[in-house]
Image 1: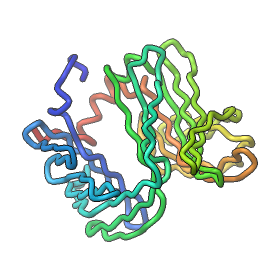
Image 2: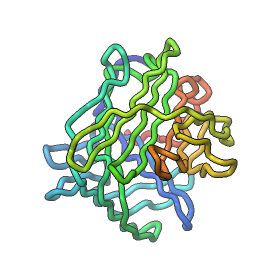
Image 3: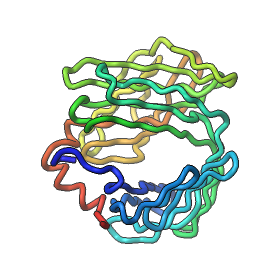
Image 4: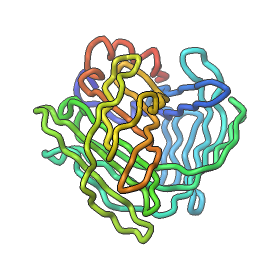
Amino acid sequence: MRGGAADPENHCAFNVVLFGEGGKRWTMTERGRGSLERSAETIRIGPSRASYRGDALVLDVEERSTPFLQKVRGRIEITPDRIYETAFLLDAGGRHLWRPVSPSCRITVEFESPALRWTGRAYWDMNEGERPVDADFRSWQWSRALGRDGPVLFYDVVDRAGALRPLALRFRPDGGIEDLAPPPMHRGPLTGWRMERPYRSETEVPRGGIVTVEDTPFYARSLVPQRLFGETVTAVHESLSVTRFASPVVQAMLPWRMPRRG
């Protein structure tokens, strides 16, 4: 929080973003500790909950999108191919951890509002930190692509001093995690909000090849056709400018997309 240390249980939310032919819906309503219940198997935040059921993680979503308060109601079921216990340090001080829980999962999405249903492949990870991200980072670039020998993930973090800390990993079907020599970094086109989005690939993506999925003042999500280790894949790619996120202007804008329901 901007004002210093805070109780995380008093600041929690279900962040659900849907894209498709029916339009885009975004929900991230922050709620207080009175709206939180959790046990070893379930966490409930307001009317939404996530539960372990057998081998699957099931998310029952009951939210309202911003800014038009449309209903977002449905179920997401994620079944991991394999669970990985390894966590990776993102900073030199060891204050921030990233754990790719299952880089390849089966997913079933069934929503009543908006009306949509599909199955496919998914990704599941976790981040945790001891202090705000703007205390230790300037930016990061992350991507995940499904290769023939397993998911390939890149995590390129730039710390407050401007030093790059790259991670390049392949998660093999046998459960092993392979360190890779990262391919060259290329400059992608700026987004509408003028966000930079460098990406790794053996070859540069032709003009118009990158598809923008989410474009905000401090965050962008894209689909990037990469050439990686001799094969062409499509990666989900995200760019985060921590410097922009921490700016007073962006902080003043956040309540419009993340309203508080104490």
